[in-house]
Image (cartoon, rainbow, N blue to C red; front, side, top):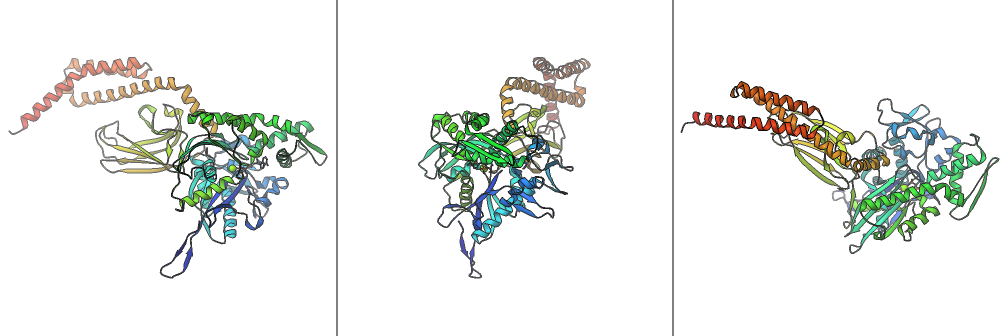
Length: 612
Ligand code: ADP
Ligand code: MG
């Protein structure tokens, strides 16, 4: 809601910038706001339509078109018409290279930064951030024009499965478009807000949000109580959506008509989309592109997409499992995204959850409307709502022997803060390498490295004496800040973790799966690593002891100690945990009396020198 304030020095009335909610979609984008009555409304500027197709076209002279006008060029000028750019946002070339066939435009490796994908249009190169910014700029201009006010602040939504890198890229695109992005919000969270669930503090509900758009699918299980929205679990696939339904029809026509490239891909794609939409009210589709019949019946269509739809149902089951609840505990199912209008989708989701689905709010608009409500919350107009999300994978650092030490466990609510204290392992150590990892495995090499930095300038002290606090701060957007501080000296270092490339959903799932299947191996492996680490420490201390205090030991004691150290070294080189532990015990047992003797002498020495 726009606020009005009076400037006390000039006496003039100032209208505060409105904060808008933006659904930056793979296929369609739109912007919404809260009107003075407090209702969420989508913006339809000058009757141009609510949905702005997420399509950008460049002409020969570099002039840019966004939205419907750009969409018209999908057929006539596919190389210069960029669609589905959200699929590329925050991703590496490696992530998307295998999908090159799908894009009619050219995606390339960035020569300077191999972690990023770029799009080549004519002689110009664009990043997915540049292109997303063009879409956001169009939305910003439409909102400003329709509302007759400056629009500079926004809440932007992203799929629940977007990782840090994709969220950061979305934020950067907003910045580039001249928007102050106040919050990145998960789409299902926004959708549930739009349905007003949870606004009554007495109400306690568990809901499923099923979002099937053009390019992404996600299902989220939310628990809402006392006006708090908590995401219990999320599941999905950022490479599954209505585009796949279109492609299934296209492939069918290609086989049926034995087409060999006579009809441009884009033309077939648009016709397929038309057929898919027609099946919401008819059973047969029959049209021609030039002399080629594009016909298909609804039954065939449903057979073609069954596997894709079933994949979403499996994801629903997985989400329930992760949340630890059963179908009967779901009070409401919310449908989001244009593809939920497909009959088979609606039927199967209703069947799975054993209840009628909720689709009373336009599934194209529901996310943007919710984003506008979130914007309203941030502008201080609704203090009764709090939003909590969860992090899908554990975050931690590497400790001695390449072990993962989890600091923020998976499924923790965000924003969250956690920390732990560490020390040095070598005398006089002045630098400490801090490597940040994401994943569930015990060994960091099996997890995903997010960042690495070095805490420098720790004052030289004996091993174990410095106290290094490592703090993780995961903000509401899911972006991690890692801070390391040596408490005795105050030496401090901090970084924002922006992973260089994204993790696909399948990879997140695989990582979780691996953690379960390898749990036993991992425990054994961890025990070996811990034994080896202990052995290394023991060897180090003993050698240092002999170096410093060799004169306290007789020849036989020294040689026996060195023999035991050599034996421990050999054992530590192998993988037999028990042998290592036995060698440690042997060395410990043999050297303990010397240490005690040394201590007694030191005390005696100290006493001697003291004046009583
Ligand atoms: P995104 O969130 O990915 O931008 P949308 O929610 O806008 O996607 O959904 C776009 C998808 O919805 C497209 O695949 C489009 O073909 C599909 N869609 C739109 N209307 C219908 C309809 N009436 N029936 C089936 N699918 C539809
Ligand atoms: Mg969407």
